[in-house]
Length: 350
Ligand code: TXA
Ligand code: MG
Image (cartoon, rainbow, N blue to C red):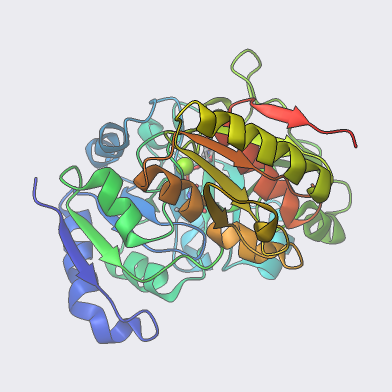
């Protein structure tokens, strides 16, 4: 398959209406189109067309029990998709939509089982990105879209990342520049007694608790237990390289990272270090990439997946990464980093 790649004017998407209409035509014909959102790029299909939705799973190599998020372009599009809109959802919608918050509802009859992986609930998101909204609106149908990466790989924050993973497997990529947040949306489940965060993101627990009172965070994230967000049980976000996180105070961790990196290079293994603005000069002798500034965690979130991919593109085999404080956005950053490391974590006590 030839994948069409078209740039759009992301500041004024209406200037690129021809490209958007071409994408919408593909969606309505049962095809797959990758498009930008403010979190990461999504791989869209008509959510009401089971055979189009199935194509998403095969293009990504995604397990069929891992349900998809449905994207809408206006709040009024929510009602037909869900059984009910609880009061708590109304509060969150008012505060955080459009934005990086996905809400789990009980699903309506309209939603095919292929979208929800057989669950009786559905995940819905109303993105803020103007290209995404115009695209979904022009499609005229709800758009099911997981992150537009090959299953298990770091999520795409650039059209070039989508191209690298999915070229030849999907019909079109709408290139709308980079995804400003760089991490996927927060997922909150409102179908139980207490609201529960199934995946942390830039809408933090603190922000949700300020609106709803107590909010739980799901911690069951391995294959033996059954997490409520099925996607959380799979190894995820991983570069080809082996990634090891070194946890501890930045100075002490840097000492250990330097020692491990040197040992690795002595064995002729291509080695990289994921550092921050504050620590980058503590390292030498191997490839050092800066994730961002410890003083503003949004810079780290925005760059994390891009840097993991960059190590891969440079053929790095062993990556040592610093760790980040698990509060506010740091919770989402560490959630992705720990999954990418698949359990390779070293704790430094001093
Ligand atoms: O920011 C985002 O959310 C991006 C952009 C494209 O919108 N999308 C995204 O989709 O990250 P994906 O498929 O990569 O991750 C969706 C997650 C998976 O972990 C999946 O298991 C969970 O949402 N999920 C979807 N529907 C669910 C449901 N009904 N109940 C529980 N978890 C659900
Ligand atoms: Mg994903």
